[in-house]
Image (cartoon, rainbow, N blue to C red; front, side, top):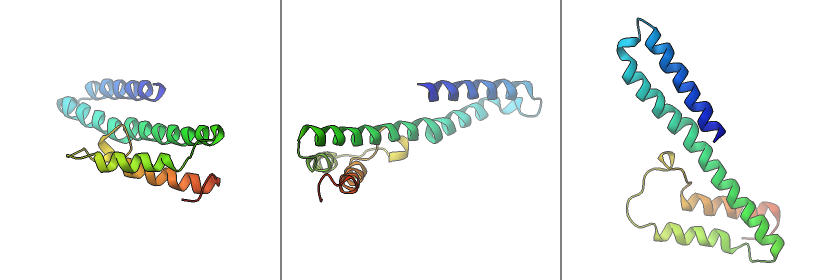
Length: 118
């Protein structure tokens, strides 16, 4: 939420600066759209995907401490990837990492932590 708020403040400041500038004011709408897309795809979405991956790792930590089979976490994401079916947007346009990536990253994390050998 904080990142989104900072991004919105930055966009607002940029819009004010553009509208105040004689040379850029005629391109104000186009620059605002371009700036909004840059913030969305360059800041907000990658930040959200990092949070999702962090949540996956924390889930594996909790599973391990609770005695569950952590090898099932990457398996879950492999099944999700297989069931994905139709067309999906590229990862850079999504708030969530690709299921295949989530499975790979969890497998690496589990091996690194020594929870299991996958």
